[in-house]
Structures are given as C-alpha cells and as structure tokens.
Length: 404
Ligand code: PMP
Image (tube, rainbow, N blue to C red; front, top):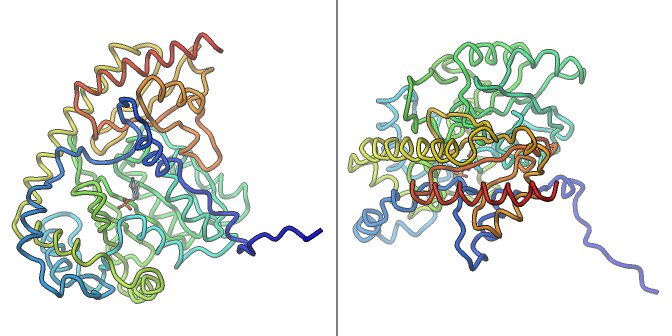
C-alpha cells in the first residue's frame, strides 16, 4: 500500500485558526433568504461616498496610478493624511507613517516584528479575534485578560502575568469602542497600561479603527498623546471604518527607529498598498470632505445605536444585558436568567434560519469563552431593519428556549 502523502506544512500552520467573523461574509452572501446582518463590522452601504469615489476615479487616474508605488505609501496620500491628522490629537510626522493594506496588515506587521514563537501576548477577553489570530500565526502564547465597562482591567494584569511566570512581549488593545464589546479604556487605565508596558518592556499594539467615530461623551487622550515618541507604541489605523473597507487602505504610526523594519517586512508581504485606492483616499481628503463625512457618520451611528438599544429594550428587556457604547460599530449582548443556558453558537443556526445574523461570543475569544453572549453591529443596518432584526432575534431565542 502506498503511504498517504500529506503536504509538508510548516509547524506554524497549526496556529492558523481562520476567522469566524470574516467567514460570515461568504456565508451570508450564500443565503438566498432575507437576513438582517448584524454580523460583519462593515460601514453602512448608504454612507459610503460611492458617487464621489466614482467621480474622483474618473478624474485622477493617470498611467502612474497603475504602476508599483513606494512601499511607505503614495506621497500624495501620506501628505494628505499628515495634514488631516495635524488638526487632531493624532498629529504625527512623515518619518513615523507607513501606509498599509488595511488595519489587518498593520497588525500582521506588528506581530511579525515583535512576536517570536512562545512569546506571551496579552489580549482583551473578548477581543477582535482576527488580531489575536495574527499573534497566534507568529507562535504567540495568548493571555486573555478580562474587561469591564471601562475596557481592559489593567489592575488585573500583574497577577495574571505573575501566574504564568513570564512577562508579555506585547499587549494587544483596542482602546476606543472596542470590537466586540463597544467599551472604552478609561484614562487612568491607559496611563496604568503604559506604566506596565514600560516595566515589562512590552509593546502596546494600539489598534484604533473607531476612535474618530465617537458620537457621545468626550474624547479620552490616546496612548500617542499620553506617551509621545514612545518606541513601545505601535499604532494601527485604517480607513476601513471611516471610508470603506474594500479599499484596503490603512496606516501604522510607529517610532522612527522601527519604521524601516516595517517597510522591510511589508516589502516581503505585498510590495506596496493598492495604488489606485491610495489615490482615491488622498483626493477625498484633499477635497476637504473628511470632517463633514465623519460628522455625518457619527450622527447616523448614534441614531442606529439608540434604535438598537430601544428595540432590545422593547423586545428583549429583562432577558439580556447590553453595553452602551459611546462610538464605533458594536454592542455586546449577554443572555440572562434562563436564556443564559442557551449557547449563542447554537443560537446562530436558528437565528440565521429566522433571518438574522450576529457573531457568537465564543468566536470573539481565543479560548472560546462567552457562550452566553454575542456581538451585534448596529452600524450597517437602518433603524427599521434593526427593529426587524431584533424581533427575529427574540423569535430565535424563544425557539431555543423550547429546546433547553
Ligand atoms: N482592528 C479592529 C479592532 C477591527 O475591528 C478591524 C476591522 N473589523 C480591523 C482591525 C481590521 O481593519 P481592516 O479591515 O482595515 O483590515
């Protein structure tokens, strides 16, 4: 008998865990019935400036728009971005910026540069598991740390770290309107986290796609302004949530001493970020439209979050608890009482059949915690559809209650 041949995959292939979140895109595309989509963290289709993109595209492209670009980013985009950020709390300089293929590439670059196999990486629990999966793909050992309504419980970290007996190499945090919980890291905890990072000589991977989307309350100073010129800060940003995710354009802001490494690493990945799309983003910013666009998004997303909380109160009040985010895309729903016996992983199937989709809690924790919770994206759906989706969610819960 011939021996069964298997492809000689690398040891790290075992650590490539994939993404339930990303897989939901094709799963939902394959559905032929009507589904209210609370699953993906995508901006509302109606707020993407498609017409303007079309007009810009028809005017700005030259043959140069379709050749290779500089790895660090198209100069016209870098300068437009620097000018834009100069009027925000994220003012920065050219020697700190590299344009990336979305936020995901920023996370990959951070992990590629800092994470060796076996290194401990602290992640929030729950977290954006595409980020934790990136750390895993470089062999990280993940340490899940709890969060509360003020974000990562930084006070709990020394004990957690002492228990495993090794200090972390990196701390992965989403400080504003966290994906998936919608919570925001308090000022005191930001300062405490910086102190711990310095004590441990650990890098803070500061992943902030939603910071410009605050719709209530006051901005809290970011890590960059609390600790300027800090080589331990690796800041990952993206246009995905503020413009459009299909553009795949983002940036990282790093200490100048690290930037060449970022460029080297990116050259071994994709040479440069999609050039035509960088030109679209640059022109959009140069025309001065970003502030107005962001103001419109904040208004719309506030309305949608309120609509979702009201619908939840109307149809699920008492059966669930939720977070109440001040910005971003997501809220976190936890089942209570008898409903807490329902697995949200099992609920997903029933809910999909009933015509509503969400991300089950365990998909948002590397260790598969939170089977009594789920993530809802309020950003992509109009208030009327949100109401319909929550009614369907209630129906799905009722069906599951009959089974448990
Ligand atoms: N980080 C977080 C917290 C996110 O929510 C996302 C997108 N869902 C990303 C990174 C990835 O961003 P991008 O789509 O630009 O790769």
